[in-house]
Length: 365
Image (cartoon, rainbow, N blue to C red; front, side, top):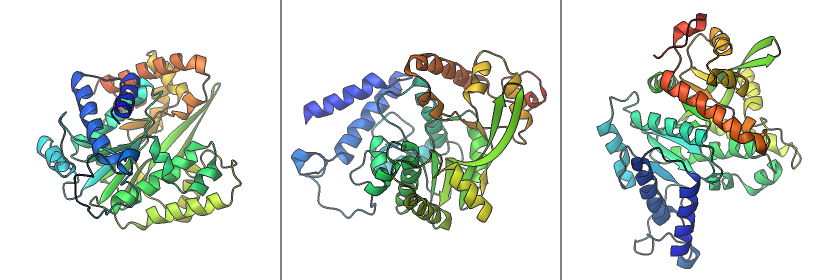
């Protein structure tokens, strides 16, 4: 068991970028906690290391008694789960949802993690903690949440698998103590935390990110608005979550194994559901493609200005289209990652301001 623990921890240390010694300490403490509390061991008859010395307790959660779950708090010290929300609220400014227990959910693999993805996820974590919310993250075991037939039907289409998994996880979290869950994709960057918190606070019962996609082909530029599950909000007892999951499973039954389109359970389905019953929007979310970020990273702002000219509200966060990295050849990914890192640093340190929509310089807010 010690060898297995050390091996897994070494893998995390080799593949994770740490911004500071405090970040490293937090990661180490959280991993020790999750290993003791959430990772069952064969040598212990499928119990976690902490369970043999504890009496049996009744679990209210149906999915995650054997899952890799990290709950972050606002300090780099190991804390018991019941203490997390209290500590966050004591350390932060007044909360927009002080009357609700909120959990922000994310998932990503623990190997081959681009540094800019780490930066994106850290921005979400800091945003969640600044509001006094719990931040929960799952590794690739997240992909095991859907039923086996769903994984078989989706085959290599992990996007569709994650579309179903996030709904199952959201339902499970809402069955516990949390009254609201917020799902955020790993490639979402939050560069205006207070702005995004306001947009999320305006959502009641449920909400999906309303994103603008700027189609660029030569000199032709075409704006296209749509809903995306890259950012979702669900309140307890809101019927949309259960309906969305049910329809996802029904749609999957109609596909043959390995023939599920990439966005079939995401934007494609949301467009259909929105036409049938108007879904609630989360405003202030951008969709920044590599075609936009490449000139932006180099200080050329014309395309970003054009994008912002179509936006009634300035984006507070942006979907950075990680799937485009997967479509990039391995030899070109280092350059892709370098470009994204430069663009993200500019967004985080400089941000976007309203005057930029009319062609002025993008300035520090």
